[in-house]
Length: 86
Image (spheres, rainbow, N blue to C red):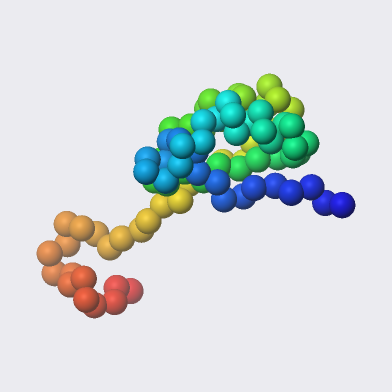
């Protein structure tokens, strides 16, 4: 049976999206014998170093990502929000 690996998971560093603390998250992943674990916090990578080090200490492969939003240049006053950008 292939082990389950979370690939989309927010930590407490995703404000208003999650309350999961890194220590509890990694301890639970280790208890469930997950070989790897990913975090994809919203708009930041503040947890990257702590997550990476804690995963390695627990014997879990860390996978880091971020959920980001890309918008047209907000300083360009000629673009209109109701028009598609190319």
